[in-house]
Length: 96
Ligand SMILES: [Zn+2]
Image 1 (cartoon, helix red, strand yellow):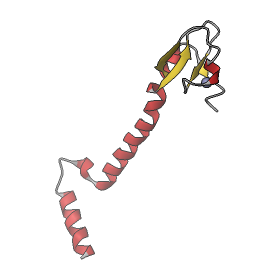
Image 2 (spheres, helix red, strand yellow; image 1 turned 45 degrees about the vertical axis):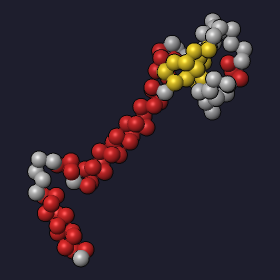
Image 3 (cartoon, protein in one colour; image 1 turned 180 degrees about the vertical axis):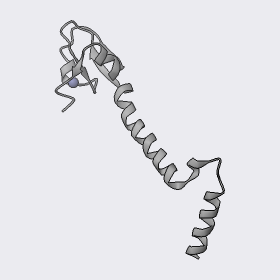
Image 4 (tube, rainbow, N blue to C red; image 1 turned 30 degrees about the vertical axis):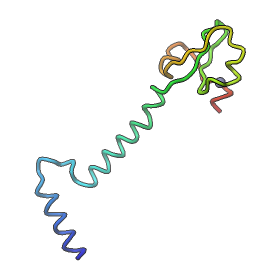
Protein backbone atom coordinates (compact mmCIF):
# COMPACT_ATOMS: atom_id res chain seq x y z
CA UNK A 1 0.00 0.00 0.00
CA UNK A 2 2.77 2.36 0.90
CA UNK A 3 4.48 1.79 -2.44
CA UNK A 4 1.29 2.45 -4.40
CA UNK A 5 0.69 5.60 -2.42
CA UNK A 6 4.24 6.72 -3.12
CA UNK A 7 3.86 6.06 -6.85
CA UNK A 8 0.56 7.93 -6.98
CA UNK A 9 2.09 10.80 -5.07
CA UNK A 10 5.09 10.90 -7.41
CA UNK A 11 2.86 10.83 -10.50
CA UNK A 12 0.63 13.55 -9.13
CA UNK A 13 3.61 15.71 -8.20
CA UNK A 14 5.42 15.25 -11.52
CA UNK A 15 2.20 15.99 -13.42
CA UNK A 16 1.95 19.47 -12.00
CA UNK A 17 4.45 21.40 -14.15
CA UNK A 18 2.80 24.75 -13.54
CA UNK A 19 3.12 24.55 -9.80
CA UNK A 20 6.72 23.76 -8.90
CA UNK A 21 6.10 25.00 -5.36
CA UNK A 22 3.46 22.34 -4.84
CA UNK A 23 6.18 19.82 -4.08
CA UNK A 24 6.22 19.03 -0.38
CA UNK A 25 9.89 19.88 0.07
CA UNK A 26 9.36 23.24 -1.62
CA UNK A 27 6.32 23.96 0.50
CA UNK A 28 8.28 22.99 3.58
CA UNK A 29 11.08 25.30 2.49
CA UNK A 30 8.77 28.24 1.77
CA UNK A 31 7.02 27.72 5.08
CA UNK A 32 10.39 27.74 6.80
CA UNK A 33 11.31 30.94 4.95
CA UNK A 34 8.02 32.58 5.84
CA UNK A 35 8.46 31.52 9.44
CA UNK A 36 11.97 32.91 9.58
CA UNK A 37 10.72 36.17 8.05
CA UNK A 38 7.92 36.33 10.56
CA UNK A 39 10.40 35.60 13.30
CA UNK A 40 12.55 38.51 12.18
CA UNK A 41 9.77 40.92 11.34
CA UNK A 42 8.38 41.49 14.84
CA UNK A 43 11.83 42.59 15.97
CA UNK A 44 11.58 45.65 13.74
CA UNK A 45 7.86 46.28 13.86
CA UNK A 46 7.02 45.29 17.41
CA UNK A 47 6.07 48.05 19.77
CA UNK A 48 8.29 49.38 22.51
CA UNK A 49 7.88 52.15 25.03
CA UNK A 50 9.97 55.27 25.19
CA UNK A 51 10.01 58.20 27.54
CA UNK A 52 9.90 61.54 25.75
CA UNK A 53 11.84 63.26 28.54
CA UNK A 54 15.20 64.86 27.60
CA UNK A 55 17.18 62.45 29.80
CA UNK A 56 15.77 59.31 28.25
CA UNK A 57 17.96 57.38 25.83
CA UNK A 58 16.38 53.95 26.16
CA UNK A 59 13.46 52.03 24.85
CA UNK A 60 11.54 49.50 26.87
CA UNK A 61 9.72 46.27 26.13
CA UNK A 62 7.39 46.86 29.04
CA UNK A 63 5.49 50.04 29.87
CA UNK A 64 5.67 49.08 33.54
CA UNK A 65 9.46 48.89 33.51
CA UNK A 66 10.97 50.69 36.47
CA UNK A 67 13.33 52.40 34.03
CA UNK A 68 10.28 54.42 32.99
CA UNK A 69 9.31 55.35 36.54
CA UNK A 70 11.44 58.45 36.66
CA UNK A 71 10.42 59.57 33.20
CA UNK A 72 10.09 63.36 33.17
CA UNK A 73 8.08 63.46 29.95
CA UNK A 74 5.34 61.18 28.73
CA UNK A 75 5.58 57.53 27.75
CA UNK A 76 5.02 56.82 24.09
CA UNK A 77 4.50 53.56 22.28
CA UNK A 78 6.60 53.34 19.09
CA UNK A 79 8.07 50.63 16.89
CA UNK A 80 11.53 49.28 17.64
CA UNK A 81 12.67 50.65 14.27
CA UNK A 82 11.44 54.12 15.23
CA UNK A 83 13.06 53.90 18.67
CA UNK A 84 16.35 52.90 17.01
CA UNK A 85 16.06 55.75 14.52
CA UNK A 86 15.82 58.04 17.54
CA UNK A 87 19.16 56.62 18.69
CA UNK A 88 17.53 54.80 21.56
CA UNK A 89 19.22 51.73 22.96
CA UNK A 90 17.52 48.80 24.70
CA UNK A 91 16.83 49.31 28.37
CA UNK A 92 19.16 47.21 30.52
CA UNK A 93 16.35 46.37 32.92
CA UNK A 94 13.77 44.95 30.53
CA UNK A 95 16.19 43.68 27.83
CA UNK A 96 18.45 41.27 29.63
ZN1 LIG B 1 13.05 49.09 30.65
